[in-house]
Image (cartoon, rainbow, N blue to C red; front, side, top):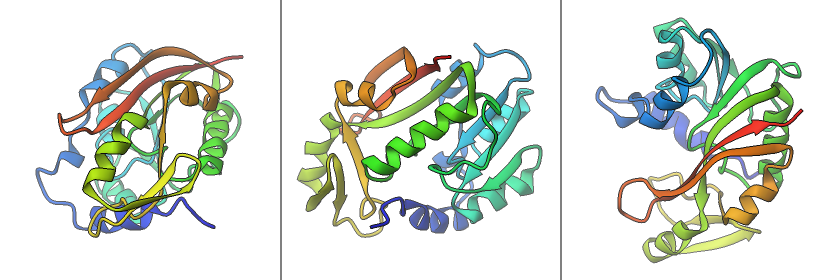
Length: 215
């Protein structure tokens, strides 16, 4: 069963993106992280959407590649220019080993079941150089009860849930994990930072993590 299907929802979102959308504004976490990186570093923005991070990072002088499975998002990035765009899937990255100094993946990696997630993390590790950093987010298990009170849902595999929530991406699989489960998933990485944080005060708990690829 194919479970990494959320790009079909987001492709429609990107095709109808409106001026002033929050999806056009880079996250402060990403900006703060970028300030710690070497000038000109090679960064892969994995699941780049319409390029809110990729375009900002390129504007800071980084060598940025934006990958997404939603072509309409990449088309928006191409209109702006300055970023290499690649249409592809997160669990089969079309790049050489060690091709990037750093990988960014904001609110993307948890769209799928555990098999998809493990393959994706292995691919992130493969395309990172030793010592390179990964900045990303994961859905916290603390968020799951909040979702269950809002929408009918069912678990389709360990920690992977779908919800009856028309008009959202929640009908596509989302993976929720505890800290121990997250650390087990990221074998081959060393933790630089890990925080479980409520994004907007409404139960939207996410893990925010910075990992360093071990040699």
